[in-house]
Length: 621
Image 1 (cartoon, rainbow, N blue to C red):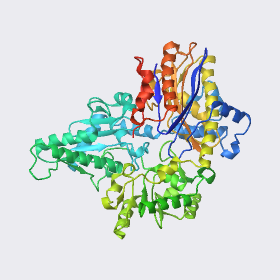
Image 2: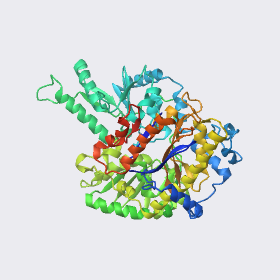
Image 3: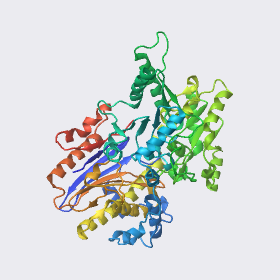
Image 4: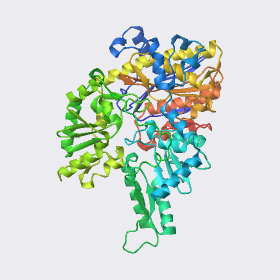
């Protein structure tokens, strides 16, 4: 059996009951995560959801029920999962013989677009092209992270450079390319997927956090030491300053300095430089220079998040931030993370980052100005223009952010910039001298975490309508497996579940690509089914399925995980035993005060008692 124990940062997990009957084994666990500016932070029991809908108190009109009828639901599926529209969604509940017509591939996802361009060259060809560019630029190593300039977990297709180079499509990982080898670092969530996706003839998988696997700074400092001993010159490490965090660059420089101090034979009394970071200023990102057909940068328009859902005006947020700036003695605060910018200005966007309602932008606040940095197309809608004008927000070109920070500092020697190095790219941080830098968590982070009444109500509403969609889907799936006696592919499960969500009031898109893993695919973290994949499986009454899915609604975000088995014996004794051990791990987390770094033992202690392999996931810091 393939089991997955998932624990997410700031998660409330409330186990209700484990049901076994002759046809269905299902764990009912309401799991909600505090995702950026989404309205999470609690859970609603299944009893409450049922009675709430039955009594008619869900008030769909107050949630924003506009244009989500039968005809519109399939167009939403087309935009969120990939597909065209059909004449009726009623066929979703049937065997859906016209599924291939209703869900065509007319619209493809960001990752699909990257895969398409990446397939034009194999790993060896891409690395050969990369090394030629490295030689031209005079660098010995080039670093390719997963990030965009905002250090986002999920990025627009144009920034999926690591995915393009490695063919590994997980959300976390960094590729390191030298003149004769290439490596990929990723965490335990992706060991399975990375081992399947990487071309082992050209890439070595570095299993981050495992014994004898060095960190990237340690690996590069060791490489720099041997390089200097062999060639008596520094190792040149190339990187794009806009897609690496300021804190990573600092860690890298410190590792180089420490290695230089420890190197034997260094000049007495002198500082030996064994490695140097070259940000290749004035040149394009090295991956971009070899990426034929690279997708364009997105410029989708913002939309205003109404006060009934936001609960706090932009001007009130700015006032609160300025009060904290006075306490910190900061004259300018910089916001780089996309969710920070969206929350601050009560703006949302659809299409820039797949399944995430954020738009590509920066923001700054001084004591006399509030500035949004973005492309002009993003603020073109009249509603957005008026909204920003009312909040006294100035809009500047996206690329002006670095120059404006530098100008602010040069205008007064006493000016100080509040910038969180862990959430800001190196290009922003390096223009701020250390004496002028306030490196601390920015004030928006705790504001997002403390939900106001409107946000909490939005979270509740989102889970009510999402629960209704899940109930419809569960009925459909059980009917397909046990009544129609047919198998259902992982792709069809994804599409049908999205279809039920699309019919709910206020639905915008899925909150992340649906994970529908049959049997062993359930152990592949962030697995995504595809019609042309060798991994694609079909569900019947003899195997289990794990489904991790959610929806983005106008008023909130959901993220729910369920595991089912439709066999006569509920999967058998082994399945029940392993399943219950995972349940006990969830209950252990739900009922305890977090003991810091010892959390792993609490989660998996029940699983250690058996010899089964249970893949689990913990959030990275």
